[in-house]
Image 1 (cartoon, one colour):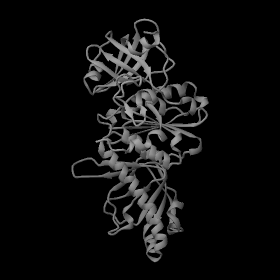
Image 2 (cartoon, chains in turn orange, red):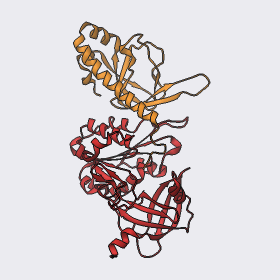
Image 3 (cartoon, chains in turn blue, green):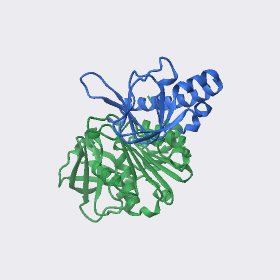
Image 4 (tube, chains in turn red, purple):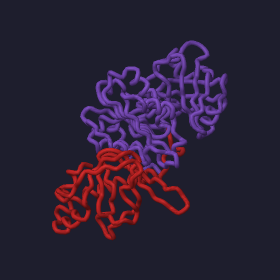
Length: 139
Length: 278
């Protein structure tokens, strides 16, 4: 995904950011005020449980949107996102974008389609991952 | 019986020259002919390997197509025949018929960017492609290798992948479905990596091999990146018996996978791949 695909809703609501390896972009439960579009680098989406190391659910790279929960209440992140390689990204001010979408449903709908496409791609990938296709089904 | 028919029907004896353990259930067998040299093969073709007294299994050639002295087959022990083959010791005898089928169109890929997408043991039939491309690297454009494996401990040809990843003229990305505490690479399905490539779809050819579901998603990802179905090739697997298009066991729509494939252009099989069989 390129930032232009998000349409007018994000115009003027972005800023370039960088993260060093190990730095968190998102923390589970934290307010979803800013999401990120990766330009370069790698980010791990992590889930953690007590007395266990964090589990990497998936890694994201260039063109991926980090943070999908910002569009819907309660506007809180659902998992941690940590840079596992240095990251260059575009930060998107989710609060301002939400206000703009509420004020103009047309640009909101356009944005929703772009974010939903990213969410569906993520869902399809997780389904395939869950199927464990490399176990006994290889050529 | 003509000589050609004999070569097709009657296995030649080969001797196991080396056994390379790859994974707990997978080995690479290096086979030397008991006499003469091995026939030439194209990347993506397969041989019927005969475990004497048990039966035959279709196994892709995974060695260097330039090496006429020795065949390499990577075998995963999943059934009685493949278990017997994977258990062969150095010096053991094995029957070989082949090579059979149509392989990867490496000549078509010359002059273009080549995107190789492999899942699990699907890397084995693509290894000869990469060996051929690397032997003639200047004749190809950008070469990208995307590999998906189950876990870090189940990465096939890990040493070769590490070597290739260190080359400036290859882009190699390996992802696993489930990482572990030591894994620092990608986690997720191999098809997710396609969207992260800045491809020039007009100048690309893609070779995809792995479980059918992975190939279907891989082709969809490549089409989403702008490639046409005609630029995508997949390697099919079906129950092959005769290997020469007579018995019909491997029929897939209008194609016999053994004779018309195993490598087929995606526009020929894409629709059939979406048909539910069970």
